[in-house]
Length: 111
Length: 115
Image (cartoon, rainbow over all chains, first blue to last red):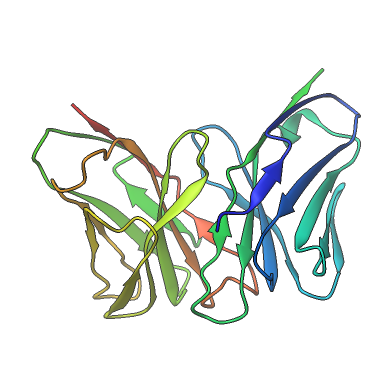
C-alpha cells in the first residue's frame, strides 16, 4: 500500500518553515526521504529506522513515530534551493518488503 | 566519479515497437531497480534485482522485461504489450537490498514518448 503524504503541495516564502508528513497503513521498519527537482533524479536526504529516532541534515530534519506508523520531514528557514518534490519511501522488515514511495509533496519557495 | 548512467535521455517509440532503456552503475551496488514516474503518482516499481542473474517483478511489471547479466548493468525493455508506455523512467541502485545504509542512488532518467 502506497504511503500517504500531506500536504500535496505547499508554497513558502524564504525563511519560513514547513512540515511534510508521511503515513502508512502497514507496520514500518524504515522511512526514506528524497527530494526531486523537475526533470532530475531524486536525491537521497536521509533514512530513519524504527525506534522513534530523529535525524538532522543541515536545516532539514525528520522524525519517525513507529507506533503511529508515520514520519515527518521538517524544513526550517527555507531557502530557494529547497524547492522541489519531496518523496517518502516506506519499507518493511524483511528483504522481500520493497520500498514503496508516496505520491510526493510539491514544495515551492519564493523570494 | 561513481554514479548511475541512464541512456538515452529522451526516447521516442512508435506503436508496436520494443525499446530498450540502458542503466549502468559503477558504484559496486548489488541491488538495482526500475521505476516508472507519472505525474501525481510518485514512483512505481517495475522490476528489481538483488543479485546478478536474478530479478523479481515489481508492482507494474506487465509489458516490461529486464535482464541482469552483469552487476553493473540492468537494462529495461518496454515491449509492445505495454499499452501506455509514455512516462519518465528512473533506474536506481543500493548497496544493500533495502537501501537501509545509504538509501537509493538514482540515475537522471529516460523520458519515453510514444509517437
